Amino acid sequence: MSEATALKHQFDDLEQQKESSTMGMWIFLATEIMFFGGMFTAYTMYRYLYPEAFGEASRHMNVLVGTINTAVLICSSLTMALGVRAAQLGEKRMVTRLLLATMFLGLVFLALKGYEYHEHWVDQMAPGFNYAMVGQHPREIELLFCFYFIMTGMHALHMVIGECLLTHLVIQNHRGDFSAGYYSPVDVVGLYWHFVDLVWIFLFPLLYLIGQHVEK
Amino acid sequence: MTPHEIIPKKTYFVIWIVLLILTVTTALVAYVDLGVFNIYVALTIAILKSLLVILFFMHVKQSSNLMKVVVAAGFFWFGIMLTLTLTDYLSRYWLPVD
Image 1 (cartoon, chains in turn green, red):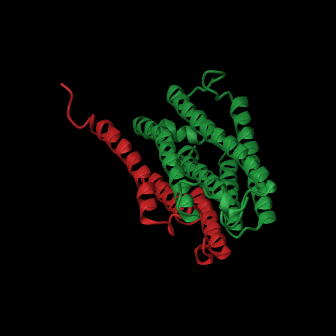
Image 2 (cartoon, each protein chain N blue to C red):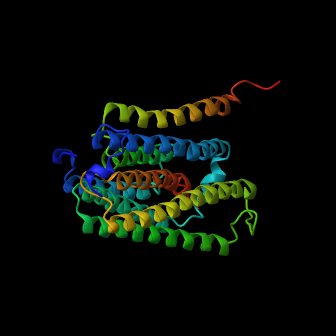
Image 3 (cartoon, each protein chain N blue to C red):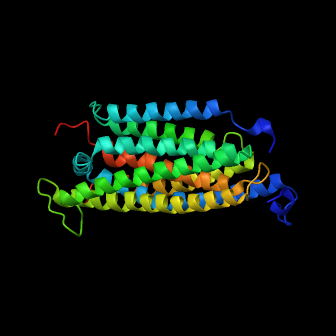
């Protein structure tokens, strides 16, 4: 797409058009902050009410897999950021490669998450399905596992949506829709991807790490 | 977009390394008993990591002031929700119940 056709008639120039799409994305991300924020607020409240139980529940998480997954997401954020940079420079083949790398790392994350879910299922920790934990605070721990599955599940859903968006970008890029003057779709999907990473940066300590310092 | 606005590759790699170091740090510190401070250390590291992602990977550092206000507003609203909810729950048991 040439720069003349990339510029929509309601904008003065490409710079203004880019600024508008980036801001639109940030306003969408503000609604996403509220969406995840509601869950984080509820989590904070219940963690305040049942600190020991939430700490004990975190000791049933697989910290090694959680840490690896955090690193995988950070790596995918790097490839995404480099992908946006390549798009800024109009390096078409590099954009494809980096977007595919980002998608691959996203799939690794989802696979490891699926492995963790499977582990919890085998250990009978899925509330509403096969939850069968005994001990001092079985009901409170069940509550944390509800938070765990809803929050990580919503996060995983965002990852899946991100994979779809990236697939679309790869097709668009292959078609030659982007140039050094017009790459806003890559830019805003990049913002989305980094945001999903941000959510995980907070989920990881809150779900996996809060109770590890207490002896089992 | 003019070339001077493009962040050098090196910056992205440095931020990436720092993020990985912070991830390992937060995972290791979690096993050290700091009492009530474990959660504060974990959250401080998480906030630090998210600031690095927002400022550099999401380009907020080099964006216009208007954009910075929009970004800050999103987190500010979350702050309002969290604060007003917690003023209720944290203060509920301060006064003795008859």
